[in-house]
Amino acid sequence: LKDIQYIKSYCYNKLEFIRFDSNVGRYVGYTELGVKNAEQWNKDTSDIAAMKAQREAYCQYNIDIW
Image (cartoon, rainbow, N blue to C red; front, top):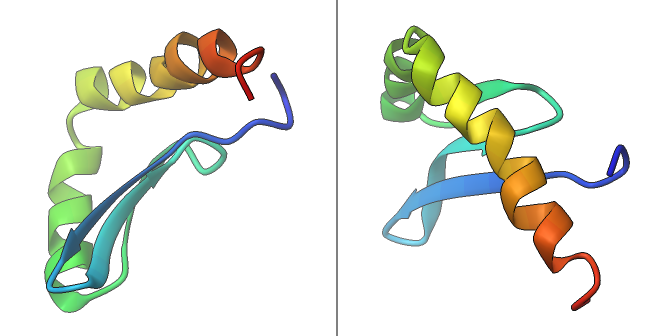
């Protein structure tokens, strides 16, 4: 499970503007709007903890399928 990465991307108009990366452990913005949103979303520690838990909940469950 250590070499598995959970990524949740948010795109608008085919452009990725923000992403949660389980290896980084926080949201990362790629546009001006994304950076502002990432700063706000990273302040919510309960959401960050829930997203980190998704790696085990989602990825570990689907390892055998892939």
